[in-house]
Image (cartoon, rainbow, N blue to C red; front, top):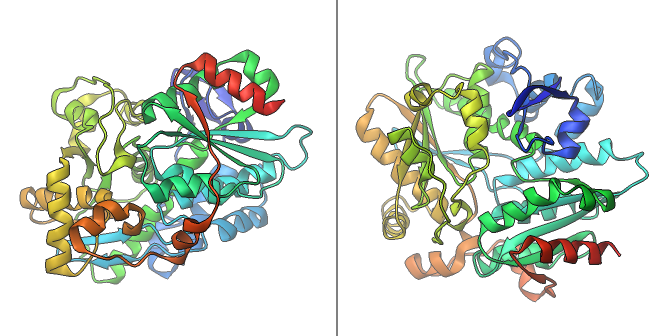
Length: 437
């Protein structure tokens, strides 16, 4: 499989280059040259396949011939080794729980897949690979857990000061070993700008062999397409009518998760609509309504992982829809909700359904219910992207005590380690060079 830059379709690279370099030199984003039709290999026999079987079949076209069939199976089995259960909330709405991995967030799927893939790609290299990643909340924890202790790879995680939850911060700062947490005085967008500037800095790249584990890296998106098929399978098994359309509601920040879903449709997954559910950082819903894309500084909310004012993967969405606003707005429906509405949804669902949503899942729930009011004949799958316990100050204020899983509770006694830096690139570069020395 070859990959091209969204800014230059004639710039073609192999899997190794796309994954390890992350960004093309023209500052575009890598895309696969073709998205294979998986109807025969996957869709026609979906209900008989395990989640790992689905992931293996979907991964093969992208990882072959760089890896053998046996190696691809190992990558899948070692990374996609936890479930994504579908929970029926009512007759029209189901929740896909994507938080059953080690960091209790959906990004475990992409991070663990990348760790397995990258560790094999660099196994014989003389230089260490340096992963540079910005996080608005869950990415950092998933990357830290996925890459912890992986040989030949160091990880530098940039997070915005005071803008991730306390437990999310501890997931970044308590692991040590090959994981270095950098606290940036600024927003997630500032963190992301530092990462992008670093990749384009030739001087810094002479000192570091840089790669990214953000969704700017195509290897993060590929495994996220797997659970769209898995969710559809579970809906069929539960009794989905063959003529009932299915729509997916995706709480969105940097839009990698939704982009993976659109890629899944190109690989034969039947989807009526995608609902792009955001908090007040609604630049994509605004684009879908007006045709005008206006990035702006992000606003802090209780659904912090979606506090993104200039989503990177918008470039990929434009590419998938041929830069055609009308075409995109026919399949993507954007909706946004403020913190008060989000809090009310958490309380309402907990009281009436005895189901506890996290703030991001609550935004998805609100969008799903509004969408169902518009399209009464559709089944909706809404993503619950993180365990509610990761947002204790918000959730416990609304519903009372929440049981904290052991994976999080053990962090409360661990020693934190983080390095502060301003959002100025020169200061960040100086810090990185000092860490190298």
